[in-house]
Length: 212
Image (cartoon, rainbow, N blue to C red):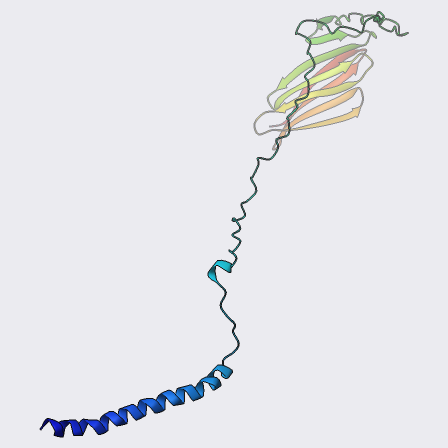
């Protein structure tokens, strides 16, 4: 029985052996071709013969220095004179005395005091005599229709100072000559007339009423 099993394995062992031999022969035959196809890389150098890589230290930034500070120079302060002391003059110099220039204008005298003209009263007139000798006469004349202030001068000029009519009246002035003047206080159909005349070198007034 054992001889029958051995006879079965022999052919298979022969086949394996033949297959292995053909593979080895094929590899040996292809080896020159594979060597020719590979690039000539060359032999690897010995590890001890490889130079060590130069390791450069990392570049460090240059030290930053503080910017130079310019020296602050303050202007020199001149000595100030103390309060109450006069500034000193340079040595060796003297100030000449100051003189006020004189003007050729003559001294003016104070104006002479003026005296008020004398005032008197004559027949109800207030009389004032001026420095030129001219007399002025002033009088207030009142009537029912109003009141008038009359002025006359000794050179024969008559004038009206003021005229104030009463309620319901209107005032009107007429003058025929410098020495003759009339003042009317009028209402409807009724008038009061004050006539002022320089007569015989004296003042004269008269009152008239017209209508009712």
